[in-house]
Length: 399
Image (cartoon, rainbow, N blue to C red; front, side, top):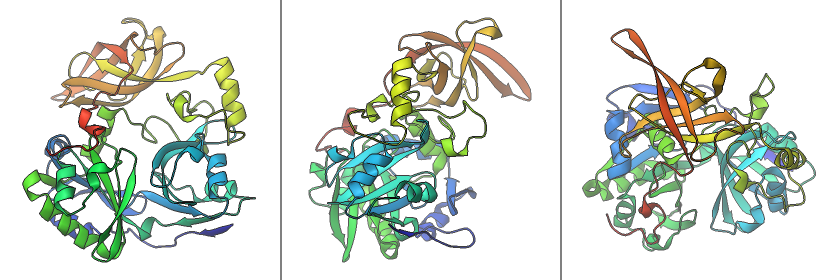
């Protein structure tokens, strides 16, 4: 087992920082795993509409990235995650979760099968110690490569047109969750048809030395397609519309909980399809098999809520009146401009939360220093709030 971890001091700046900082009129930044990352650049609402109406560009460089390779790379990943990675061929990307021995989710992420026996695992959180411990007994190399790979999310209906105009010939044949490689000024540019917006989109991965050149070429190609840089706030709204999970929102990483009952299993997060019990062994298998037999304690729900007041941090009730009927709470909420819906993700106690169920959400909102309370009726739905046909079309077609 060969491992390597980064050592650095101070707040890092992405290779794209020199291009993003001049666009930032709001000066709203936060720390993302050691990097400076913009909340918003000029207006979160306008940035959001770039995602849904044009081409939006988000700096993905701070995303944690691990290169996993070696003779036992596949066996190692199959032990680590709940899905069967043997089905993910080279040139494909898989969404996956990994659990502790109690079957509780540590994190979710994407695994890129770059080439035969070579993978890249991307996640929000840092898991180097867990990956090392899980690698005992395997002939595998794990390298932390976050700082070695610059990355951009290029999302929206005109993203394909923008990238095609940049000269990426053959991109139209790339299917969702596929990846391919191009030459960019003598350097390998990897493009994957992935994203966190629920829309047509791609992610670009390149050597940091070519980051600025890639940014310039991308924005020149997208000038007539409404290309805009965006911050985290706009991305967050789009991921809620898509029904995507986020660590510290829909679940707390199991290795960071203090109290029992605060973590969640994949089955409780609606990720049953990611748990393959046909595999001989993986972390948490025994606990998850027992949960499948006995039933889960919690259930993730998607809620279509009446009214237009977002249900941030709200309790969910089985009945309109009476606090004794509290069954869960909202984890993420937003008013969706594109869907014209008040939407939310939440977690409720079983057996509540079946599609078609009616629940009540207790919403508090403030207007001119006065707090208002309302009980809003909500329906449990089983589909993403936003799933346009272009998201899965191959080729996507010009927009």
